[in-house]
Length: 461
Image 1 (cartoon, one colour):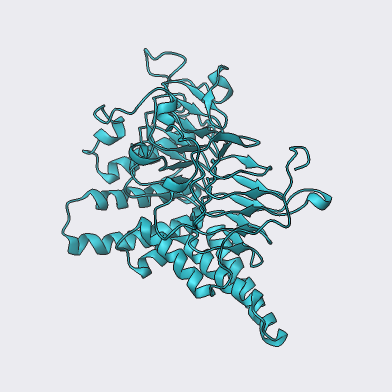
Image 2 (cartoon, rainbow, N blue to C red):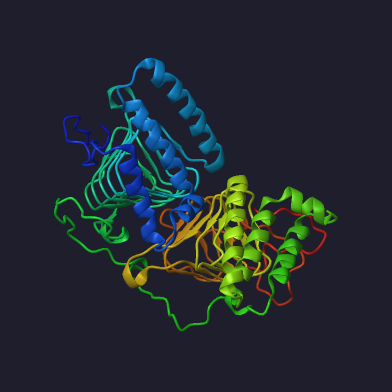
């Protein structure tokens, strides 16, 4: 903080979250926030489908007991029991929220792997996505925890640490590191994060309740990623080949997935492959759920099947951290890493792609530019990369670990950075050279992740 010439004013007013609300009122506000993204869903459906609500329920009760003026003989046993509950939630979801943290009403949390340290302050109607960390850091008098204003959006795998303030309507991009104060309506990206624009978060969060009358401080309108790159997505253009293979049954697609895994473990039995590769567990559930979702079945049959499959999906998420929407279209021959992968609805992934652990492929954007990525064939997405928004990734592209992709990616490109830019080095730094390329393919853009049978090479995920 001293290095940046900015300091946190301890006398400044805290975020406008309402401390006089009961834990039940706060939790109802959280549920209302989730209901905006699933209108018409029942309360039971919301509670089953969103791990963020599991963690928020435990936190609201634990925080209420922690702040209540109860006799020690009652308070201590309650806090011990709540701590056991908290650990159970951590094991099931990877979400850890200290009871000493203060979270305002209307919070939306991603389903997995979020850490919020003690004494952190989070304002009203904030959004905290998968893998985000809000924690204590610093030295001496500069040690402390972040204080977030209202309607702040923390992107996937972003880290906000230290004695700093994030003002209202700010956005922290995925895979970014925030160590300095953030002004109102700023969009921050990079490591360390720098101001990308002054577009803010107001039109990223649905207009659910009245906003505090703080005025609209935005001084500029951010161009969408596609406009900034000088391009646009042609909705009439052919979609990736994964979307055109509707004639394949779910069983044919799953057999193709198994065949892809078998290439890296020649001689392994089917039982051994299914037991040792969590990616195949998640793909089996997704293939069946996607088949049922797209099938022309009577509602009296389809709805119960989808409810059962949703429970199965949640069990897979708890066991592996892998979440794949049944509304995503995934081509045959996919290789998934073992843990912590998120693929949102309407995403399109081409044939013979590789997705490493910790990868996020999700919806983002504003207005008509809001959408999900469309990924071509033979694309390699390495560990902890994030792809968000209405963008296209060309065939044979490589996304380097910990990168953030918000623009279109051309064929056979290697993308690196936050936000990602084309890397001018060799693909061989990230892609294995394996024998058995199809005849006639260019050496720079072959089926790099598809070995000939019997090579036994592991993919670089």
